[in-house]
Image (cartoon, rainbow, N blue to C red; front, side):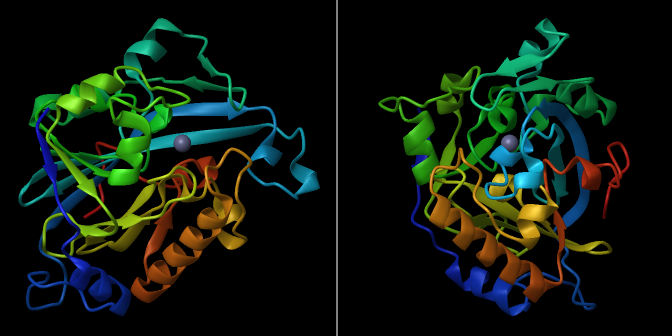
Length: 292
Ligand SMILES: [Zn+2]
């Protein structure tokens, strides 16, 4: 296993994120970040579940109310290479189960109408062309295709790696092919991290849903800052009124992380894109269209 253990080293950039100042190296003369050229939103499956109240404890109106959840992957074209954030549910498994893949914990069913591999091919890319991979957390709907990207450096919180990927760990719901991810060059993080050192893409630690959940702030020249929440929240209701779904690893940390993300989003005037919020996802441009 190739592994790079690093101590978190770019706290100065987090401070800049909070202060709306941008980081060293970002921006041309107009103050816009120079690093990220494009952000593609890719379809990475969709889910349905019979009881929304599991994500919204205390909201009686949601009991036995069915929900659908979108699932997106995000492809970032940076001057230093291609980065994929989130990898979706394992497309080979979905392909074998056209009626959907049932997951026992939340009684939901995942389906996939088209594969991530095909959407990359539509852009002229192979999985081997991806240089950097990260996901919000190691649940099957986010990590499922991670092992396709064998040339990529993997960015993951140390706590998430230890809980789900360490050879000695016994994760409750091991994702398909997850052992293969250990072969990737891995950067284990202990907090926020400026991926390219220019302030354009910042991983934000947001534990709670899982031990090492993380979110992503992407600065785009024309679109402006975009915060990709991952599963820090699952839909807008839980952003407006932070709640911890019943299945979350640490409920108190969940609330603290949402408050942290809300402060960063407000300070940066960032758009907030919630991965599983189907209503919001329906309003986004999907690949091959892109944001710049
Ligand atoms: Zn999820």
